[in-house]
Image (cartoon, rainbow, N blue to C red; front, top):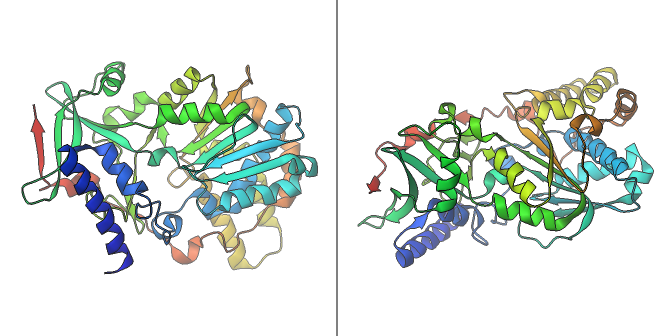
Length: 401
């Protein structure tokens, strides 16, 4: 039995055990086991390097991403009146490449800022400091929180559950939703959901924002992920929902295939992140595309600097192409960046951006890719895409009224 098969077997056995004990489990519980079962879930296997095997992330593509965030953190440090210690807590740090790129860049941008910076690179279940002055960062974390799934049938909300059939096969069933949190939220949407429409409800956002508020005494939150406001997320353009899988750079396998071996994600409802933040004393500054965020924190100046320096042609092309990927809407530039604050009111996005003169000055410190970063041009990842519902044809599904 190879490692992947053994890993999947442990995850499936855990799911079957839970279903046997309870009769059925919610999709969010299924997703939590598939991703986070200690020692065996997708994110918890010791041998797994998802950012290399299954997908790429902005920090893994180019160190310029971390350099731009370092520039933003320096600006936030200045807005906090240059405290002697400014803490940055990154949650969901994975292999730590973003933390290394940020701290390396900070040391070149501003020695006083670098000396004050205390960086905590942590994973979702790690203990973290509380009541800090500084910033909480996450990159592609919230999209991997377990989600409940629903479907509108005859005008009513039905929740998706996972069960076993008579042959012990994992099957999907739907039942009229009794989850008041889901029902109240979906019924509050300005545009009613259409019959047959599917979607997701992130079950971890409220606890997440309460945790962030506990971590942060004063400062900022930077949340980078893919998603949108609720009116777009639950519009007819997302009629089939946004649940997606990633396995070896192929999108769209059924969530009931490669259990424990593939990533499961769903678009983030940034409206809920903002609303939940407000309940925890966190102020919304703004939500923008990643491309716009990077443009305001120096990526254009760094790109121009790279074009003009003497560098091996292959290395130059690799670095420039990677920067381009960070900004292209069809690649990583379409991700969203949400910036929030605590005990920092009356701020706008414009007040967060450094001056053009500063960005021009910082460009001379533009970092180059190293072994921490994936080679884009040589790998030429195609990221094949399959519509996820196409793989549900023939999959057992029942609806209990």
